[in-house]
Image (cartoon, one colour):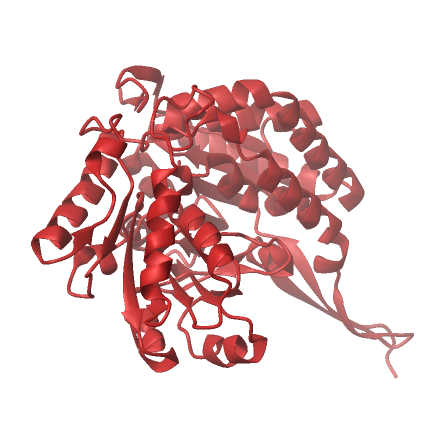
Length: 461
């Protein structure tokens, strides 16, 4: 028997524990999902949309409980009210575009021929969700998958065990049948075994590069479709004509919000040399206004990281950079709540370069390195000098300049004058070690469906 334990970063104590399903029990659950999917798929699209929408509404009713549980599970301060803004925005958009996104592509429809491409569900979609934005990232796939007529099996991260239970509770209350949406507690061995056994038509994984590689290995030879979103080392580039106040506010929020635990968070910033010193000074002032502490206290703006071992990765990267010549600009005495464990003070580093892990490897914590650059060519070279490619953030008053530069950046999304945001109307995707596939927008429906061609000859002549 494997027991999954959730240790709260708030106090280091076990907050929840659940027994993981055996492989046989998990296989039986997937079989129930497969058996229930056909009846779900033949429901009118409007009916499936209504039930999923009702499920999201039921989740909103649970907001107070959800926000409290999130603080205990992964440390996000309760003052931010959970993820409901993003949840509601994304669900509303994806349900609104469903009819058009799932519409057949008709090439001929007359008395002689019917020729078209339909979009049909994969069958059972497997969602392996992360802990950092545990509701939004899961729902990015769950909503379109259910709307498109799939059954969904969710395996949530051990750090956010209760999230899957709340999603199941809400969706079932909205009218999604229990076998059509299932939350399963699984260990890694069983998870990989299910994929290896061709249990699913599509697997969506959000997490680490190592985790994505494990999913690919498990799926090898099965021809199972996969979507992999594996994080980033997202850069910002502040040009000489940028609105400095706006750039500082958004970039530092992108670096520090959620204790820096965001796949599209800002982890490195390149600033035109004419603005560099001014920009750095304002960033230091911005970060020093943060308050690290207990996530249940209203004045706390920075909670603990989700796990002490995650915080240690950031501490190690920061210490190595300082030993190699980087300058830390945030003083320890300003953040007395840093306990050497999950509670980690934020840090701004200058004097950094790309020989340092803090500028190359994903940090996933509240640290950011800032480098001066002479212009666009140097900034482009540094932005592309990364194994990741999720987003890049350009700061300028010149859209044409941003457009020209953006075409040369190796990334999934190019922002101008904003950062750290998933727009459901445009797709979420990445390149290099960030993974492959797409979610959100109409392409999000393409991921959870497959094409089927219809070619009917209606008459002999």
